[in-house]
Amino acid sequence: MADIFDEVSEELKQDQLIQTWKKYSKFIITLIIILIVLLGSYHAYTTWNKKQIEVASAQYFQALKKLEDKNYLKSHNLFLKNSQNDKSGYGVLSLFGLAETNYQNGKIDQMLINYKNIYDNERIDIFYRNLSRILSVLKDNKSSFDQQKLLLEPILNSPSKLQIVAAELEVLLFIKFDKIKKAQTAINILLKRSDLSFEQKNRLELIHKIYKTNAK
Image (cartoon, rainbow, N blue to C red; front, top):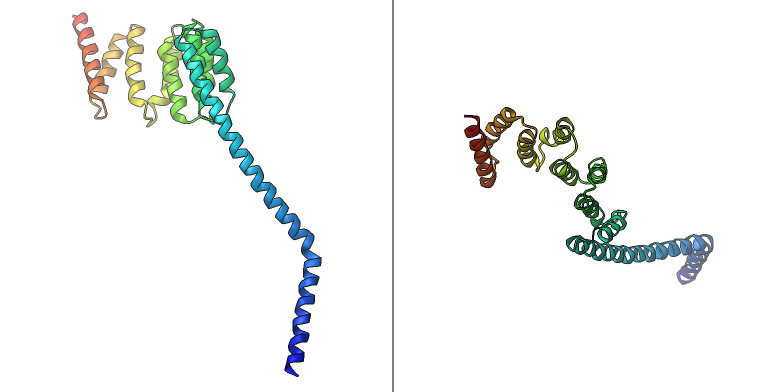
């Protein structure tokens, strides 16, 4: 008797499984298809992305070679094309390359715009944005003292890795615009810093000595 109930129970379970499958089979199959498509898409994307990075890398180094060969037009075009690639770090590096080609070509206004496009872009890492500020001031022979000093302020007033470099550049800026007393004051402040490198200390002491001697 118990065997008969077991058989009936087993048949009921099978019927329930069949009914459940009929009810949810479309949903289950759809879910499986979606998973397959997602996995396939992810694999295709990673393959495409890797290829894009390889292309960007090759293009970047080709542009550097053209810059080294003083083929500024070709270098500019390659950097410009690569700078539009936001999928790799070579896009940001190419923005710097673009500024350098304009600098070498004597197009200072265009160079300043290139650097501005970097330090105004909040999606770019702050280190590169600060570096673009420093390079902009370092290579700028057109803007006023106030304009260049203002550009350094965000670095000078923050705990940036490039703060000490910006502080030294500020000294050179004072000298460039014949503000010798301010330069000497800035040097004295800098020489008291514990994070000053040996090379920086030697440079600053030499500058201080030269202008102190000339002042006499």
